[in-house]
Image (cartoon, rainbow, N blue to C red; front, top):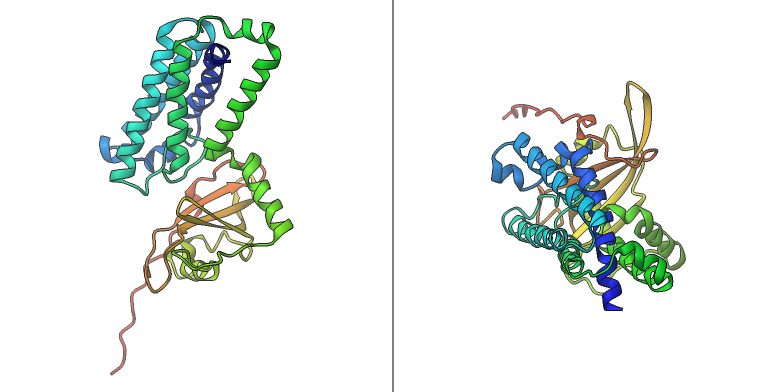
Length: 299
């Protein structure tokens, strides 16, 4: 089984790197994503950060092509392992210096750096090590051992799904909705550090982020979930552009331990997801709230 895993590792790594590399190199949201990563602080320029992210995407595509074409070669596997190790180090630096920054893993979705970000980088590094030990082409394994190959590829797909936050809409969100329909919306049995959802909603509705997003929001709270220290609140909304009106999901992410009493001005992450295309809508559709001058009080 171990030789089979090593021989199929180039295929798995190549598919993953091809998807993430194409997203970084050709994605329309790359510049927006780069602006929210620690690269802006390191390179001191948004354009250089975007160029760096696109360069990484080009490297990933080159490694993917090499893994597919020469699966028995040592260098593509070693390069993949080095890329995974380097990205793990980058994530550790970003988490230590700018924990609120985005991962920049796939250029398909934004989100804070968490356990799954490190898990995916670790899987890339481990996959590169396995690919470096391949002694047979992956296509020969698919034809000679189709049953075992299917099991290995299915296990790899499950691991990557669990480690990829940008694929949550494929399986995790439907699973959460099904759980809520079957079991209801469970609240923690003990208060612990988490606060009630109503307190988080109150905190959000007192924030500047809520005031800015109000022209887009068209519903009350529709759904919520906790993930890696964040509480995500989902509302329905819509926005207009030259093509007409488009429905969106408006997602707000707040620290799930904060309340109005402990953090009157919380950091709030806002994301708009187009319901029709499932793409991230640029934040430019949100109109900043103008600063109002306080009126003098009569004495």
